[in-house]
Length: 388
Image 1 (cartoon, helix red, strand yellow):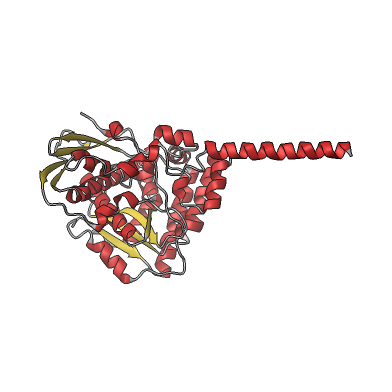
Image 2: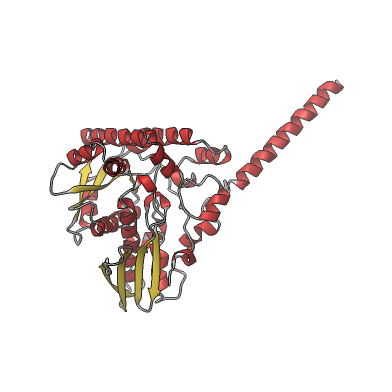
Protein backbone atom coordinates (compact mmCIF):
# COMPACT_ATOMS: atom_id res chain seq x y z
CA UNK A 1 0.00 0.00 0.00
CA UNK A 2 2.78 2.44 0.90
CA UNK A 3 4.50 1.71 -2.42
CA UNK A 4 1.31 2.51 -4.31
CA UNK A 5 0.84 5.72 -2.30
CA UNK A 6 4.43 6.72 -2.99
CA UNK A 7 3.96 6.08 -6.70
CA UNK A 8 0.76 8.08 -6.67
CA UNK A 9 2.48 10.97 -4.92
CA UNK A 10 5.37 10.83 -7.38
CA UNK A 11 3.00 10.67 -10.33
CA UNK A 12 0.98 13.58 -9.03
CA UNK A 13 4.17 15.54 -8.43
CA UNK A 14 5.31 14.87 -11.99
CA UNK A 15 1.97 16.04 -13.36
CA UNK A 16 2.13 19.21 -11.28
CA UNK A 17 5.72 19.84 -12.35
CA UNK A 18 4.83 19.17 -15.98
CA UNK A 19 1.86 21.51 -15.81
CA UNK A 20 4.01 24.17 -14.19
CA UNK A 21 6.67 23.78 -16.87
CA UNK A 22 4.02 23.96 -19.59
CA UNK A 23 2.51 27.08 -18.03
CA UNK A 24 5.96 28.68 -17.80
CA UNK A 25 6.66 27.82 -21.44
CA UNK A 26 3.32 29.29 -22.49
CA UNK A 27 4.03 32.50 -20.58
CA UNK A 28 7.61 32.73 -21.85
CA UNK A 29 6.47 32.34 -25.47
CA UNK A 30 3.76 34.97 -25.20
CA UNK A 31 0.84 32.58 -25.61
CA UNK A 32 -1.23 34.84 -23.35
CA UNK A 33 0.20 38.08 -24.78
CA UNK A 34 -0.47 38.04 -28.52
CA UNK A 35 -0.33 41.56 -29.88
CA UNK A 36 1.04 42.99 -26.63
CA UNK A 37 4.34 44.49 -25.56
CA UNK A 38 6.58 47.18 -27.08
CA UNK A 39 6.76 45.40 -30.45
CA UNK A 40 3.04 46.04 -31.01
CA UNK A 41 2.59 49.51 -29.53
CA UNK A 42 2.60 51.13 -32.98
CA UNK A 43 -0.79 49.62 -33.80
CA UNK A 44 -2.42 51.25 -30.78
CA UNK A 45 -0.66 54.63 -30.79
CA UNK A 46 -0.49 55.39 -34.51
CA UNK A 47 -2.81 58.42 -34.28
CA UNK A 48 -1.85 59.61 -30.81
CA UNK A 49 0.33 62.56 -31.84
CA UNK A 50 -0.92 66.11 -31.68
CA UNK A 51 -3.28 67.07 -34.53
CA UNK A 52 -1.40 68.57 -37.43
CA UNK A 53 1.84 66.73 -36.64
CA UNK A 54 3.79 65.28 -39.53
CA UNK A 55 4.75 62.42 -37.23
CA UNK A 56 1.16 61.19 -37.41
CA UNK A 57 1.77 60.36 -41.04
CA UNK A 58 4.97 58.44 -40.32
CA UNK A 59 3.12 56.48 -37.64
CA UNK A 60 0.64 55.43 -40.31
CA UNK A 61 3.37 54.64 -42.83
CA UNK A 62 5.12 52.10 -40.61
CA UNK A 63 1.93 50.03 -40.36
CA UNK A 64 2.04 49.27 -44.08
CA UNK A 65 2.38 45.88 -45.73
CA UNK A 66 5.97 44.94 -46.57
CA UNK A 67 7.98 41.84 -47.56
CA UNK A 68 8.72 39.38 -44.74
CA UNK A 69 7.99 42.25 -42.35
CA UNK A 70 11.47 43.60 -43.01
CA UNK A 71 10.17 47.20 -42.72
CA UNK A 72 12.71 48.49 -45.26
CA UNK A 73 12.04 52.20 -44.73
CA UNK A 74 13.43 55.35 -43.16
CA UNK A 75 11.83 58.78 -42.90
CA UNK A 76 13.12 62.33 -42.58
CA UNK A 77 10.58 64.75 -41.16
CA UNK A 78 10.71 68.49 -41.61
CA UNK A 79 8.26 71.36 -41.46
CA UNK A 80 5.50 70.43 -43.90
CA UNK A 81 7.74 67.88 -45.60
CA UNK A 82 8.52 64.18 -45.30
CA UNK A 83 11.21 62.28 -47.22
CA UNK A 84 10.91 58.51 -47.61
CA UNK A 85 14.08 56.43 -47.98
CA UNK A 86 14.83 52.79 -48.62
CA UNK A 87 16.94 50.99 -46.04
CA UNK A 88 19.00 48.67 -48.30
CA UNK A 89 20.30 46.70 -45.31
CA UNK A 90 16.79 45.42 -44.59
CA UNK A 91 16.41 43.16 -47.61
CA UNK A 92 15.69 39.45 -48.11
CA UNK A 93 18.90 38.63 -49.96
CA UNK A 94 18.51 35.96 -52.62
CA UNK A 95 14.72 35.98 -52.18
CA UNK A 96 14.64 39.51 -53.59
CA UNK A 97 17.93 40.02 -55.50
CA UNK A 98 16.69 43.00 -57.54
CA UNK A 99 14.78 44.62 -54.64
CA UNK A 100 11.43 44.24 -56.42
CA UNK A 101 9.59 43.32 -53.22
CA UNK A 102 11.44 45.99 -51.24
CA UNK A 103 10.17 48.75 -53.53
CA UNK A 104 6.64 47.34 -53.51
CA UNK A 105 6.76 47.53 -49.71
CA UNK A 106 8.03 51.12 -49.84
CA UNK A 107 5.08 51.96 -52.09
CA UNK A 108 2.78 50.51 -49.44
CA UNK A 109 4.31 52.78 -46.79
CA UNK A 110 3.97 55.79 -49.07
CA UNK A 111 0.30 55.01 -49.68
CA UNK A 112 -0.47 54.67 -45.97
CA UNK A 113 1.23 58.01 -45.41
CA UNK A 114 -0.84 59.70 -48.11
CA UNK A 115 -4.10 58.15 -46.91
CA UNK A 116 -3.36 59.39 -43.40
CA UNK A 117 -2.47 62.85 -44.73
CA UNK A 118 -5.99 63.42 -46.02
CA UNK A 119 -7.55 62.05 -42.85
CA UNK A 120 -5.43 64.30 -40.62
CA UNK A 121 -5.95 67.51 -42.57
CA UNK A 122 -3.00 67.67 -44.94
CA UNK A 123 -2.96 68.25 -48.67
CA UNK A 124 -0.05 66.11 -49.88
CA UNK A 125 2.01 66.39 -53.07
CA UNK A 126 4.28 63.35 -53.51
CA UNK A 127 7.22 63.22 -55.89
CA UNK A 128 8.97 59.94 -56.63
CA UNK A 129 12.77 59.61 -56.74
CA UNK A 130 13.49 63.35 -56.45
CA UNK A 131 17.28 62.92 -56.30
CA UNK A 132 18.81 61.09 -59.25
CA UNK A 133 22.10 60.87 -57.36
CA UNK A 134 20.44 59.04 -54.44
CA UNK A 135 18.25 56.11 -55.53
CA UNK A 136 17.49 55.31 -51.89
CA UNK A 137 15.39 58.48 -51.64
CA UNK A 138 12.08 57.04 -52.75
CA UNK A 139 9.83 60.05 -52.37
CA UNK A 140 9.45 63.59 -51.09
CA UNK A 141 6.01 64.61 -49.85
CA UNK A 142 5.24 68.31 -49.62
CA UNK A 143 2.44 69.06 -47.16
CA UNK A 144 -0.01 71.92 -46.77
CA UNK A 145 -2.91 72.46 -44.42
CA UNK A 146 -6.13 71.18 -45.89
CA UNK A 147 -9.54 69.89 -44.90
CA UNK A 148 -9.84 66.67 -42.94
CA UNK A 149 -10.97 63.99 -45.38
CA UNK A 150 -11.17 60.68 -43.54
CA UNK A 151 -12.10 57.68 -45.65
CA UNK A 152 -12.81 53.99 -45.26
CA UNK A 153 -9.23 53.37 -46.44
CA UNK A 154 -7.60 55.56 -43.80
CA UNK A 155 -9.88 54.09 -41.13
CA UNK A 156 -8.66 50.60 -42.05
CA UNK A 157 -4.96 51.41 -41.51
CA UNK A 158 -4.76 50.01 -37.93
CA UNK A 159 -6.93 46.98 -38.82
CA UNK A 160 -5.14 45.81 -41.97
CA UNK A 161 -3.12 42.64 -41.49
CA UNK A 162 -1.93 40.03 -43.96
CA UNK A 163 -4.07 36.91 -43.52
CA UNK A 164 -2.04 33.75 -44.15
CA UNK A 165 -4.72 31.37 -42.90
CA UNK A 166 -7.52 29.32 -44.43
CA UNK A 167 -10.12 31.16 -46.47
CA UNK A 168 -13.72 30.02 -46.86
CA UNK A 169 -13.86 27.48 -49.69
CA UNK A 170 -17.62 27.44 -50.22
CA UNK A 171 -18.01 31.14 -50.84
CA UNK A 172 -17.32 32.78 -54.20
CA UNK A 173 -16.41 36.40 -54.79
CA UNK A 174 -18.92 38.51 -56.71
CA UNK A 175 -17.64 40.26 -59.84
CA UNK A 176 -18.25 43.64 -58.17
CA UNK A 177 -15.32 43.01 -55.82
CA UNK A 178 -12.85 42.71 -58.71
CA UNK A 179 -14.31 45.82 -60.33
CA UNK A 180 -14.01 47.83 -57.11
CA UNK A 181 -10.43 46.71 -56.52
CA UNK A 182 -9.38 47.59 -60.07
CA UNK A 183 -10.98 51.03 -59.79
CA UNK A 184 -8.64 51.89 -56.92
CA UNK A 185 -5.79 52.16 -59.42
CA UNK A 186 -7.43 54.56 -61.88
CA UNK A 187 -4.71 57.18 -61.24
CA UNK A 188 -1.85 54.67 -61.66
CA UNK A 189 -1.87 53.97 -65.42
CA UNK A 190 1.39 52.00 -65.35
CA UNK A 191 -0.14 49.39 -63.00
CA UNK A 192 -2.89 46.89 -63.65
CA UNK A 193 -4.36 43.67 -62.21
CA UNK A 194 -5.11 40.34 -63.83
CA UNK A 195 -7.59 38.07 -62.06
CA UNK A 196 -7.70 34.27 -61.89
CA UNK A 197 -11.15 33.35 -60.58
CA UNK A 198 -12.33 30.30 -62.53
CA UNK A 199 -11.60 26.78 -61.30
CA UNK A 200 -9.30 26.15 -64.25
CA UNK A 201 -7.40 29.43 -63.87
CA UNK A 202 -6.90 28.92 -60.14
CA UNK A 203 -5.68 25.36 -60.63
CA UNK A 204 -3.19 26.48 -63.27
CA UNK A 205 -1.72 29.36 -61.28
CA UNK A 206 -1.84 27.45 -58.00
CA UNK A 207 0.18 24.60 -59.48
CA UNK A 208 2.88 27.01 -60.63
CA UNK A 209 2.99 28.72 -57.22
CA UNK A 210 3.51 25.40 -55.45
CA UNK A 211 6.22 24.40 -57.93
CA UNK A 212 8.02 27.69 -57.31
CA UNK A 213 7.74 27.20 -53.53
CA UNK A 214 9.27 23.76 -53.92
CA UNK A 215 12.15 25.27 -55.89
CA UNK A 216 12.76 27.87 -53.16
CA UNK A 217 12.91 25.14 -50.51
CA UNK A 218 15.41 23.22 -52.65
CA UNK A 219 17.62 26.31 -53.01
CA UNK A 220 19.76 26.39 -49.88
CA UNK A 221 20.51 30.11 -50.09
CA UNK A 222 16.90 31.16 -50.69
CA UNK A 223 15.74 28.89 -47.87
CA UNK A 224 18.33 30.43 -45.54
CA UNK A 225 17.55 34.03 -46.47
CA UNK A 226 13.81 33.53 -46.07
CA UNK A 227 14.13 31.70 -42.75
CA UNK A 228 16.39 34.40 -41.34
CA UNK A 229 13.35 36.64 -40.90
CA UNK A 230 11.29 34.21 -38.81
CA UNK A 231 11.20 35.13 -35.14
CA UNK A 232 11.11 31.99 -33.00
CA UNK A 233 10.65 33.38 -29.49
CA UNK A 234 8.65 36.05 -27.72
CA UNK A 235 11.88 37.64 -26.50
CA UNK A 236 13.23 37.84 -30.04
CA UNK A 237 9.99 39.42 -31.27
CA UNK A 238 10.09 42.10 -28.58
CA UNK A 239 13.79 42.76 -29.12
CA UNK A 240 13.88 42.94 -32.94
CA UNK A 241 10.30 44.11 -33.56
CA UNK A 242 10.27 42.84 -37.13
CA UNK A 243 10.05 39.60 -39.11
CA UNK A 244 7.47 36.84 -39.39
CA UNK A 245 5.83 35.30 -36.32
CA UNK A 246 3.62 32.35 -35.43
CA UNK A 247 0.85 34.75 -34.38
CA UNK A 248 0.83 36.33 -37.84
CA UNK A 249 0.12 33.00 -39.57
CA UNK A 250 -3.64 33.21 -38.83
CA UNK A 251 -3.74 29.69 -37.40
CA UNK A 252 -6.68 28.29 -35.44
CA UNK A 253 -6.23 29.17 -31.76
CA UNK A 254 -5.39 25.64 -30.62
CA UNK A 255 -2.75 25.23 -33.32
CA UNK A 256 -1.25 28.66 -32.68
CA UNK A 257 -0.92 27.86 -28.96
CA UNK A 258 0.61 24.45 -29.67
CA UNK A 259 3.10 25.92 -32.15
CA UNK A 260 4.22 28.57 -29.67
CA UNK A 261 4.59 26.16 -26.76
CA UNK A 262 6.43 23.54 -28.80
CA UNK A 263 10.17 23.69 -29.48
CA UNK A 264 11.49 25.72 -32.41
CA UNK A 265 11.70 23.61 -35.55
CA UNK A 266 14.77 23.20 -37.73
CA UNK A 267 15.21 24.62 -41.20
CA UNK A 268 14.22 21.43 -43.01
CA UNK A 269 11.03 21.00 -41.02
CA UNK A 270 10.17 24.69 -41.31
CA UNK A 271 10.57 24.51 -45.08
CA UNK A 272 8.36 21.42 -45.22
CA UNK A 273 5.64 23.11 -43.17
CA UNK A 274 5.76 26.20 -45.37
CA UNK A 275 5.55 24.14 -48.54
CA UNK A 276 2.62 22.15 -47.17
CA UNK A 277 0.84 25.35 -46.12
CA UNK A 278 1.44 26.86 -49.55
CA UNK A 279 -0.18 23.84 -51.19
CA UNK A 280 -2.90 22.91 -48.69
CA UNK A 281 -3.87 26.31 -47.28
CA UNK A 282 -2.75 29.26 -49.37
CA UNK A 283 -3.44 27.78 -52.80
CA UNK A 284 -6.18 25.32 -51.89
CA UNK A 285 -8.44 27.82 -50.10
CA UNK A 286 -7.99 30.89 -52.30
CA UNK A 287 -11.32 32.20 -53.57
CA UNK A 288 -9.36 33.88 -56.37
CA UNK A 289 -5.84 34.89 -57.29
CA UNK A 290 -4.71 38.26 -58.56
CA UNK A 291 -1.53 39.33 -60.29
CA UNK A 292 -0.27 42.90 -60.02
CA UNK A 293 1.17 43.99 -63.36
CA UNK A 294 3.49 46.81 -64.40
CA UNK A 295 4.45 48.15 -67.81
CA UNK A 296 8.05 47.60 -66.71
CA UNK A 297 8.41 45.44 -63.61
CA UNK A 298 12.13 46.32 -63.41
CA UNK A 299 11.45 50.04 -62.97
CA UNK A 300 11.55 51.00 -59.29
CA UNK A 301 9.06 53.84 -59.66
CA UNK A 302 6.55 51.39 -61.13
CA UNK A 303 7.27 48.95 -58.34
CA UNK A 304 6.46 51.75 -55.88
CA UNK A 305 3.24 52.47 -57.75
CA UNK A 306 2.40 48.77 -57.57
CA UNK A 307 2.87 48.89 -53.80
CA UNK A 308 0.58 51.89 -53.59
CA UNK A 309 -2.18 50.00 -55.38
CA UNK A 310 -1.61 46.88 -53.29
CA UNK A 311 -1.95 48.90 -50.08
CA UNK A 312 -5.14 50.55 -51.31
CA UNK A 313 -6.61 47.19 -52.29
CA UNK A 314 -5.67 45.66 -48.96
CA UNK A 315 -7.16 48.57 -47.01
CA UNK A 316 -10.35 48.36 -49.06
CA UNK A 317 -10.52 44.59 -48.58
CA UNK A 318 -10.11 45.07 -44.82
CA UNK A 319 -13.02 47.52 -44.76
CA UNK A 320 -15.14 44.94 -46.63
CA UNK A 321 -14.27 41.98 -44.41
CA UNK A 322 -12.02 40.32 -47.00
CA UNK A 323 -8.59 38.73 -46.53
CA UNK A 324 -5.57 39.19 -48.79
CA UNK A 325 -2.12 37.62 -48.90
CA UNK A 326 0.85 38.07 -51.30
CA UNK A 327 2.18 34.87 -52.88
CA UNK A 328 5.53 35.92 -54.32
CA UNK A 329 7.05 32.51 -55.02
CA UNK A 330 6.88 32.76 -58.83
CA UNK A 331 8.62 36.14 -59.23
CA UNK A 332 11.06 35.21 -56.45
CA UNK A 333 12.19 32.22 -58.48
CA UNK A 334 12.17 34.19 -61.74
CA UNK A 335 14.36 36.87 -60.13
CA UNK A 336 16.66 34.19 -58.75
CA UNK A 337 17.05 32.63 -62.20
CA UNK A 338 17.91 36.00 -63.70
CA UNK A 339 20.41 36.83 -60.95
CA UNK A 340 22.19 33.52 -61.51
CA UNK A 341 22.02 33.62 -65.29
CA UNK A 342 20.28 30.25 -65.50
CA UNK A 343 17.46 29.05 -67.75
CA UNK A 344 14.31 31.10 -67.05
CA UNK A 345 11.91 28.28 -66.18
CA UNK A 346 9.72 30.36 -63.89
CA UNK A 347 10.41 33.55 -65.80
CA UNK A 348 8.87 31.87 -68.84
CA UNK A 349 5.91 30.70 -66.73
CA UNK A 350 5.27 34.28 -65.61
CA UNK A 351 5.27 35.56 -69.19
CA UNK A 352 2.77 32.85 -70.13
CA UNK A 353 0.59 33.57 -67.10
CA UNK A 354 0.45 37.30 -67.89
CA UNK A 355 -0.48 36.53 -71.49
CA UNK A 356 0.05 40.10 -72.70
CA UNK A 357 3.39 41.45 -73.92
CA UNK A 358 2.41 44.98 -72.84
CA UNK A 359 2.49 44.00 -69.17
CA UNK A 360 4.93 42.28 -66.82
CA UNK A 361 4.30 40.40 -63.57
CA UNK A 362 4.95 42.30 -60.37
CA UNK A 363 3.27 40.39 -57.52
CA UNK A 364 0.80 37.49 -57.31
CA UNK A 365 -1.64 37.34 -54.40
CA UNK A 366 -4.76 35.59 -53.17
CA UNK A 367 -7.99 36.85 -51.71
CA UNK A 368 -11.11 35.47 -50.10
CA UNK A 369 -13.20 35.45 -46.96
CA UNK A 370 -11.19 34.66 -43.82
CA UNK A 371 -11.98 31.85 -41.40
CA UNK A 372 -9.63 33.17 -38.70
CA UNK A 373 -8.85 36.79 -37.93
CA UNK A 374 -5.29 37.85 -38.75
CA UNK A 375 -3.22 39.20 -35.86
CA UNK A 376 -0.80 42.10 -35.92
CA UNK A 377 2.87 41.80 -36.83
CA UNK A 378 5.55 43.55 -34.76
CA UNK A 379 6.67 47.03 -35.73
CA UNK A 380 9.81 48.99 -34.95
CA UNK A 381 9.53 52.16 -32.92
CA UNK A 382 9.36 55.51 -34.66
CA UNK A 383 12.76 56.40 -33.20
CA UNK A 384 14.31 53.51 -35.13
CA UNK A 385 13.12 54.66 -38.55
CA UNK A 386 13.65 58.43 -38.31
CA UNK A 387 16.79 59.99 -39.81
CA UNK A 388 18.06 63.55 -39.69
